[in-house]
Length: 408
Image 1 (cartoon, rainbow, N blue to C red):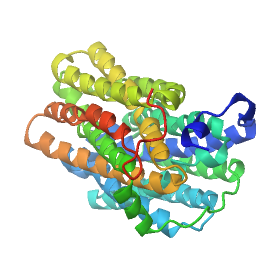
Image 2: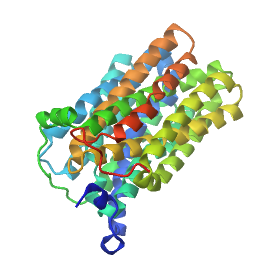
Image 3: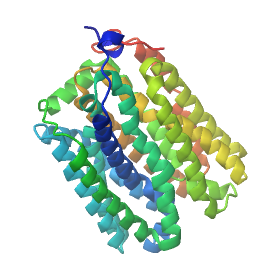
């Protein structure tokens, strides 16, 4: 059976996911929500944390850079080291670790200690995503995998629409430490949900570092996926990490930031939900649209934002683009490396988090050296080559051959 046949089963052989299976997907999505909120919450609390711990906005951005770098290393390393462990047990251990990281961060009074706590967040992110990113293949029947993948990645949209804005709200009223404590409690809730709802998932075989290197060397589709991840994600985070200072420089009051982040998150979540039907049959056009929407939004943010309503409109467009990034790119990897989902996902996770680190760090240098809005042009320029990569990469799959799935 070809990959295309597996992706497009006949009606007579289609099996649908049960309610219990969807509950297991929901538990993993909740874990993604908490992990992503833990990673991105400093975006909304950058100014108060930096002010209390005595660092500049650019230096405070290291709270995003450090876990990104750690996660980039943790993704492939954890995939190899936990290769023979039950994936459910791995998820449970990581939920406990992210809880400890958030409780620890809430107690620090020094920026160095804060970064140490963020190292633990990075370990959790890298290892969690390596397992969760491709887990839909094991939780639901094949016909439901695209929608289950979108549901798992919906945790990212939920983090942006609920997690980060709610954390920013709590931080603004009760202090940033309270926001981190709440997040620690939610991490314990994830621990309980996974324990109750996710079935045992025995290892399907150990992954070795050599096999990861061999996949990159021999699989042109995976290499294209890595380039797509880097350009889109670093382009996003070089600007989005500093959205608070950008909005302030454009005349938007600081009290409006939480609501604007929520507008971005609403759009991102809606796009993630919609992506379940789009990425299954129209992956290439989806990736084209993602790059175009994000680049246009960044250009408009640099030119036109001078009021809350204008900022909201631009962030809605930006969110619509970014909401489809994770499920679309993950689907690219799964189709480029069928049968090697966990190895491909660990590479995606590595590059995704490395790109977060590169983008946030580079953006911090620009913000401290010049004006915050300047990072918007850098982000937009990084998105320009995406269309060419998608067009070229589609024609070459594993070992340079044509990829076995439909582009549109």
